[in-house]
Amino acid sequence: MSTLLVQPQLSLRTALVIGAGPIGTSVALALTAGGVRVHLRDTDPEVAARAAELGAGTLEPPGGNTDLAVVAVPPGRVGAVVRECQRRGLARHTLDVAGVKAGPLADVLARGCDPARHIGGHPLVEGAADGPLTARADLFRGRPWVLSPLPQTHTDTLNAALDVVTACGATPVLMDAAEHDRAVALVAQAPRVLTSLLAARLEAAPPGAVRLSETGVRPRPWASEDSRGRIEALLANAPAVADVLEGLAGDIVAVVAALRAASGDGTADTGGRLTGLLAPHGTPAVRNRTDGSS
Image (spheres, rainbow, N blue to C red):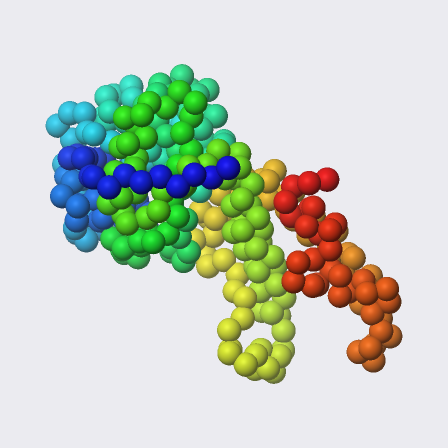
């Protein structure tokens, strides 16, 4: 069960942000605006330099332990980066912001990291494109920010993470890592897959078909600049996304069968099958598949 948390007072003084993409740079901008001295690192020095030019922090290495390292790297790199932070004494605590939680946290443990000083997190935002130039200090304002502590995570580490969430103006939500991944698969990743598949068909549609839209808005495939990150996150959460899509595949097959059985004159819905499948609350079978029941 998710639990809302409140942490009104900001106590961080220094932070290290590793990964100067839109998420990492947005966090850095918010922390800097809150009076935190932020040090920036990225595998691409030019990317880190652009983030620094935006006022997100300094490129100078931290003089010692920072209060917190924000690990804003792809899910598959989280464990290695957390291990490096702890081995080199770069920060007292680490917070990763990967969009998938169970796999990275398992990797943190497998690499022998100190679980008391790490916590997983995920700020839920839409439309964050690639690169620091799209970053904003208010990107997370009013948005949910999931925190998934390990059983061993120390209270001081949780409070440091809450300081980050507070500085970003987000709403902290405590959630189990596996529960988070199933929820993200259902509400974000699977819909993006379906939208992208539909967009691919629309790309090949006659021009006149698109003009029939009242708003002119149509599904679009993942843009080339952000597809790599989305694919990495999708693969990191592959089992949960596959479960959702498998359930939807069954629903689609049922809808197709109901449509094929209809008379075509707009009046025949044999046994109410189509109505049951597409009603606002769906059929019991559809509800069971979406909530993980069998």
